[in-house]
Length: 235
Image (cartoon, rainbow, N blue to C red; front, top):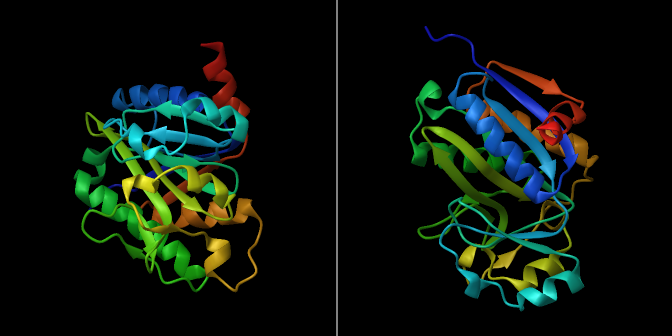
């Protein structure tokens, strides 16, 4: 009989991308040292494009110098995957969890992230699916609603998933999303006739779907982002 598993969830609101990156690095180190339990960051970013470690700059369709004019930033990361947009009205989850402690391999981990988003979409009557071969993320028909890009270091995860609630879709026109041409991007707002609740509720529902998919027995909600963000600033 396994021991009960707890997931600690930090509700951070809107966080600058670089700040979230440094926070993830700090938490990964602490998780490796067994100083913290499995942890999940729930947040949004200001308009930001990120590239994975493959550096597929050709999938950014406008000059980098033009990004400030549209109010966006560009950052290079060590995650897997291709170019992705993050912005307001998007639910972003960054799990900092030990795959060894839950007995998961990398592929099973990614598939479970996909399953979390598929289960969440079903709450609103949206029939989502995992991507076909060479397609990452989660799709509604041929329209992408959720992106996944992860990093695993010594069995500890970082980065994660982004699900489109109701983002400004114009930002996706400037990239080849996740490097997959001739495919549309969609959002929960576009795919459901259901009246959506507040985004805070949506974030909580997505977190609950993830916790269930990974078989956590208990979710501990951390409501004060200053406790973790201010500590990071002092360091």
